[in-house]
Amino acid sequence: MSISPTVRNVGIILILALAVFALPGGGTGAAIVQTLISLLFGLGIGLFLMRLYRENRLTIHGLGDQYRTILYASLAGILFLGAAAAKWWDDPALTLVWFAGIALAVWGLVATYRHWRAYA
Image (cartoon, one colour):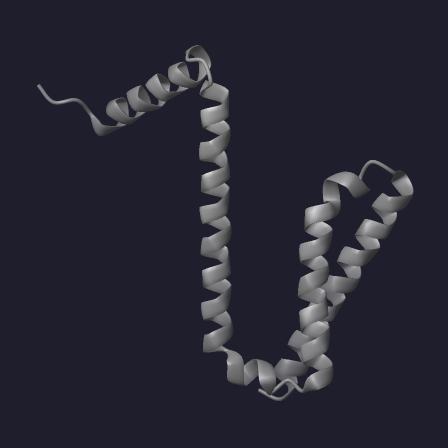
């Protein structure tokens, strides 16, 4: 008699959850695993972006200095504002500044895209 793969996988998850709950230091072990998964996920995104840049390097450099600067500044702004979102949303004034920053970054990406499409 064979066990369904879904039932087996659910059983494995339940056993791991029981170990995190019941064993001493289980929470610390879970935090370590979570950190490792986050690091691997970030590394994967970084490698994907590096490959994306290498495949489109000619197109990016063909934008010209002004639009390439707008593109990089917009991407950096989105990254910064995404990382700082939890702290900025605590204050209503900073929330408005956060949304204005996101709107400005999106405008920069749209302007770069429109410039790229005009000469493509």
